[in-house]
Image (cartoon, rainbow, N blue to C red):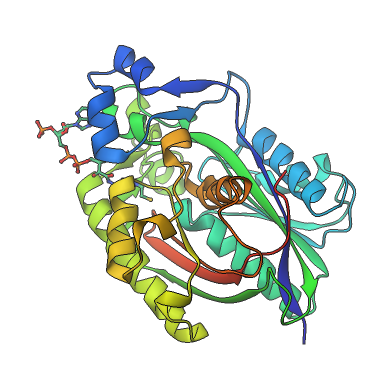
Length: 335
Ligand code: COA
């Protein structure tokens, strides 16, 4: 039997900081509204010409470094979770693999929106546990600034760009960093709550030309808010039951950084004190598939995570999709 263990964590944020004050010069909004409604103070946006694959490659390189590996390391499987791929075709992952010198690695993208990182983590952990690969790389990377409508002040203040990556390897059952279980789910009846209407076969085959607005990200905020709290709470509880942990045994909850009020509501539903819920969205906003590795890196760098402590990751996103993961925290330094 093989066990999947987290061995490295790397992140990359584009340097351009976009504060709430700057957004208030572009939209009819204010620092006060954004802060009280979302908890976000600033986010990062890519410079013109910079893509999701660029961010993913740098985060992947840093994750390899954190695991004591270099470009060209033996990686059997690379998955890039993203809502904002470099192109509709081909996938972003093969290009990232090539740029990291990961010769012949299986490489593909996962489109599970904000749940993508947890979905990809499960797939790579499974491949290791089944003995198919020795080592894998999971990258969550996004450039939402490229799909935000200049006419939509609500989505434009929430989302940010960034990338986070982890290296998983084969390890011992009692080793810190072990992935112990997952809970994944979806409900496609909520497909219209989060969507980019144009660019896919449904719009193209309709014979109706897409408007500029149809290429932008849309979200029904209030309904998404309620679903996010419900699904992340239920999924977390289902997973706790499956791995046999009580809430008291969880060191930290690392939830998808959607909105501070969502994170507070989920912690409350689980009976966790607020200080055990990791938050970093004040600095980066909602970075979708990159959100969980960015939050993990932030908490680890701040010294909040102890080696061996039990972590519960939980995410929710468009689809609708949701997913949770249980692991213990390894003895690693994020790069
Ligand atoms: N600045 C100022 N006012 C804004 C605004 C902005 N950026 N965006 C919306 N508003 C206004 C609305 O127009 C509305 O005005 P009205 O009452 O005059 O009609 C008012 O604020 C309240 O809007 P509402 O949509 O009811 O706000 P809300 O409390 O639901 O908060 C979200 C909006 C988007 C922050 C919230 O719904 C949310 O966080 N949803 C989930 C988002 C998310 O996490 N998505 C990803 C999940 S993976």
